[in-house]
Amino acid sequence: MQKDSGPLVPLFWIGFGYAALVVSDWIIGYAKAGSVLSLVAALFFSGLAGLGAYWLSQDPGNIWVFLDTSGTLAGIMRMRFYRSGKCMPVGLVVGANWLMVAKLGISVLSKPCP
Image (tube, rainbow, N blue to C red; front, top):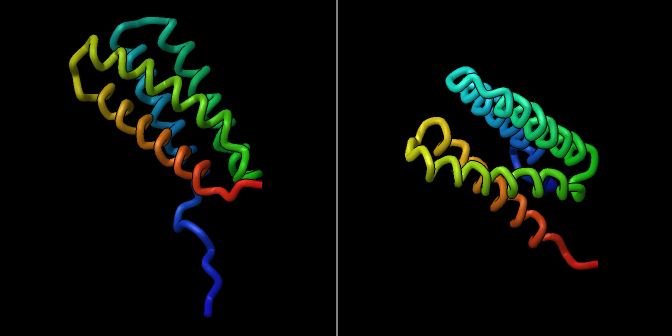
């Protein structure tokens, strides 16, 4: 019998892709609106998401920075989605945020209690 090696794609690789999606969405917002605040938010939140994914790659139990970042972004992007009413690119990022929050939440809840 072979030992189960876990998920096919480790969560931190999904996290790095998520960070890239976040930065691309905010940079598109900067290019369209010319808002420096969008650019600063892009760097801040994608940096936190990348840092959270890196910490997750070092220790699979260290998900709190990543979970907090994706949860905060889920709320922010939901407000942007309701204001704009456009599915692209805001709706895509809202969906990705909620999927990340759900995946991380399942990861936390599936761990045995100490």
